[in-house]
Image (cartoon, rainbow, N blue to C red; front, top):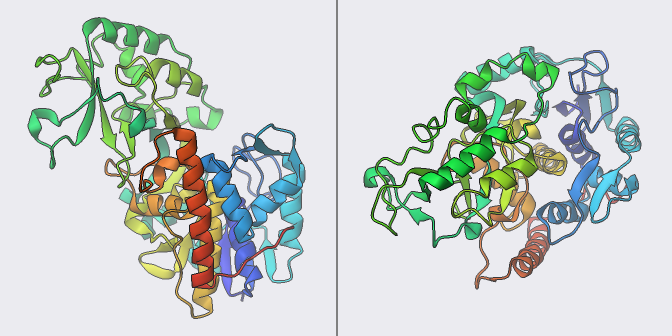
Length: 449
């Protein structure tokens, strides 16, 4: 019997297994492929990239680049493997996807303290009473999903993403938008940002929205198309009639435009999405539009002409837990200290975000086994901010999130210019990471591949 079981051999599971093994644990990594494939995977390799071969920007003054730099400093297997198998991609880090997956598979399989078992895990009890990390990803199969629902409570397990876009508050034109709650019923004054529309502005927006291009659903998502009725994309609502939105998510009742004192023809409301109040989501705007179309169409909304989107709306098959109700920022399950979750099932979006949560889970599983307290990274670092977000959530209901600078606490004093501010946030993050490592005694799991 090993010291730790890791369920799932994707990016998060591979990173978690490596970090725990590098710190002395005997690890069994369970991966069901190739005996049991998912609709999205095509190979038996660990850490297969099922979509793009790009891991995002490599520039440190971009949020994905900062997260990669932090993980390099920490000794990430995933990032080191990506660096070793990179292909030309300008300022991004893209990889030869087969070489990347093969390298991680070889490193994991060749590790003296990791045993890879190719079998499907349908219950957590199947791996015994030992500590475990669940990193089964967004396509967790039904048997284990039912087990997770029983463990977490079915109300805390979701099977689809129905995400609305999120923008930075600083990119909203406050000469147009205004703070208010309907009929002044907010818990505090101005719980929502409101973008008012006149009739002509609404008509122009409706025409653009109903004619915009959408993302085709894959076969296994079309099989579950009934989901869309319960959480309908805004563009489908709009196609039901010209006034469908004006009497739906854009209804203006209980609001008055301070510029005129009158009720607008329609209103798009934005709701605070993080505790720092730097990010806001578009209420009721879950969408399946292509990302470029989202920028084009949603910037027709008055006040959002220069909106900076840190997350676009999405609708696709994706199993994830309600992490703010279930996890600590150490990635520990609140109901059992030796059970950890990692990867997209926790709501950390993107390849590198998944690896980051896997790193934290593997590190803390090893620390717990050694009799040390698990650690959470500073919220001023990107790895810490991402884990704090998914384990604290926003005020409008939890949805998965990728790395972005809006997750980090503001600078004091503030820096006005965006690029200078991002560079300053990155410097602070890396400085704080160094201090954290010196003070916590966290060791490195991998000094290159």
